[in-house]
Length: 72
Image (cartoon, rainbow, N blue to C red; front, side, top):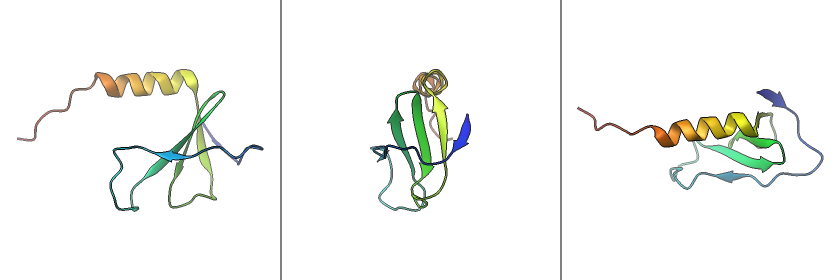
């Protein structure tokens, strides 16, 4: 995983459909040929993190396997 600077081609950024209505705590992602880019939605002109496809797939797969527990 690395912090990267903006690529030559402008990526298409998107927020999760689960993001809340307030804009104070969102991340945005963009699909690229080698994986995904992740950035803070409040700093669109700043740096982003580049994650390879394999690492991203394992991360998302782990999230999907997790079953949320009800609060006590």
